[in-house]
Structures are given as structure tokens and as C-alpha cells.
Image 1 (cartoon, rainbow, N blue to C red):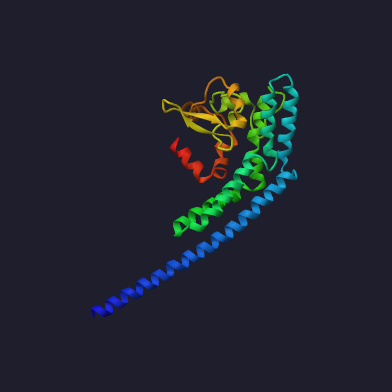
Image 2 (cartoon, rainbow, N blue to C red):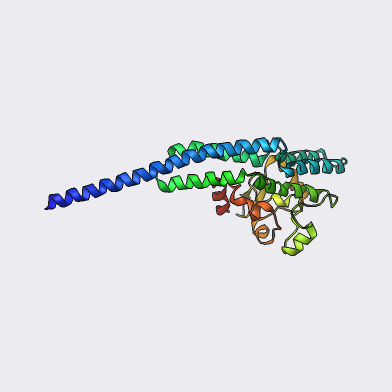
Length: 253
């Protein structure tokens, strides 16, 4: 009797093991197909960007040229900053190259993925990258650097998909953190660091460091998080344009 029960339990365990293995194999096949689809989507987005198929790429380039024409008597670093901002109108900009880097990480990591929870996490990341690779979503992301250039023009260029600076600050009860503030919090342009007092402040990456001289004071996370103005990335884009590592860093901040 005891032997029969033991055999029965062993049989149930084998059935459960086969079922779990089948589910995991099926999920891995789904993951492999998702990687292939994401590769196609990211590559196709790069083609659309460089061929000017996304309206806001042309708008970004036009605004960059207009601002450079307005700042001819300003420090050369300002013109260099404008050129750097317009890189997002090409496949060499930080937004698109960031997507390529995330895809490369996903491809490298999927070889070590084991178990259904890890596979699901990998699928979630690939889904986010595919959403970010849609032409419309990329075009929306470009509204932030476009509106930064609009603000740098001192009113000569209008913001896109946004209220005027004055109206937006009032509507959102926001503080004016200066030119470039739409990009604060976006890991494509900088990151939150801590000073010796443990306060988190925004640190621009080197190519955007000239923004520092345009701000009245450092931007601290506490004040910014309570009084920031509207930006596409912080309101919507962060769900698809933030890598898992960047999400962890943001949560730590």
C-alpha cells in the first residue's frame, strides 16, 4: 500500500514537472520571437528617423537652426549645446541609441534567463522597447528637446504640443527651473547624484553640461519633484523609455 502511494506521488511529480517544463519552453520560444520582432522594430525606427519620416525630427532640426541664428553673439558652447540637442533628429541621438543599448542588453541577458518570472520580466522589457520604437511615440519624445529650444529662443519659437511656458507654469503650479528643465529627470540627458549632505541633485551628462551655467542654482530632487512643470518624458514617456537599471536608480533616488 505504501509503495503504491509512493509511486502515485512520484507519477504526479513527474506530470507536474513535464507541465512546468512545457510552459517554460513555450515561454522561451515566445521570448526568442519577441527578440526578433524587437530587433526589426528598432532597426525600422532608425530608418524612419534618418529618412525624416517622423515630422518632429524635421521640427527639431529647424528649431535648432533657428536658435543658432539667434545666439550668434553667445558663447560657442551654446551653439555646441544646440547641435547636441538636435542629434535626437538622427539615429545618433541619445534617445535612439539608448533603445539600441537596451535591446543589446536584453539579447545578452536572455541566455541566462530561467524560470517563468524571469522570462516574463524579459518579455516586459522587450514590450517596452517595442512601444518606444513606434514612430508616434518617438515623435512625442522629441517634443521635450523641441520645447527646450523654443524656450531658449526667448519666445521667438512656439512650443509644440504644449501650452506656452507662462501658461504651463501657472496651470501646473510649477517653478521655473530654467532652460532645459523639460529634460531634467530623463536618463538620456543626465542622472540624479547625491552631494555630501545626502541631497539628490541633477547632474547633466558632459555634452549637456552647459545647461548648468544657465540655471540659477542646482536642481534638487525634492523641490523639482514637487514643483516641476510638464514634460512628455516625465508624464508618459518614462514608462517605455526607461531601462530596468534606470528604473532601479530612480526608485533609489
